[in-house]
Length: 128
Image 1: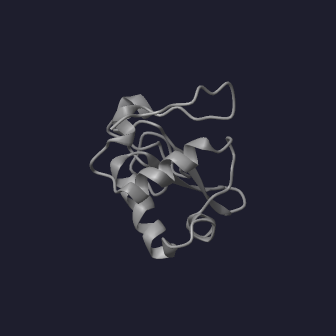
Image 2 (image 1 turned 45 degrees about the horizontal axis):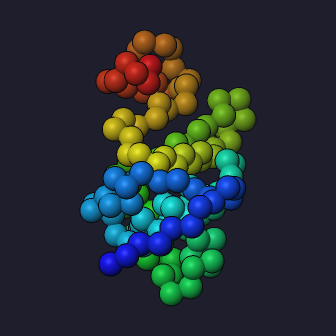
């Protein structure tokens, strides 16, 4: 097989071979990861929009692929609750290499350094 590559000056995404060849991920998950990494920061993509833009995979297939990415550490979701308003939202982070540790939870409403409700103790000081 001969591989032909075009030199690009702009509007392209670089991915590590290890990411593209990660055997824990299906080809669908790898394609979705490449697509997500090609988007600008603060892009809004979810399972529904990904499925709508990629006919033939369907929401169930996209959902399964996103779960693969999450399980492998490429896709991280963090739920945040505003202590004043009680509003809850989810922040999503996409990485080009798998992350070993989860993101820290948003600050809880309990007293610091206790196990009261609202406080999450993380075993990894890196996220402290």
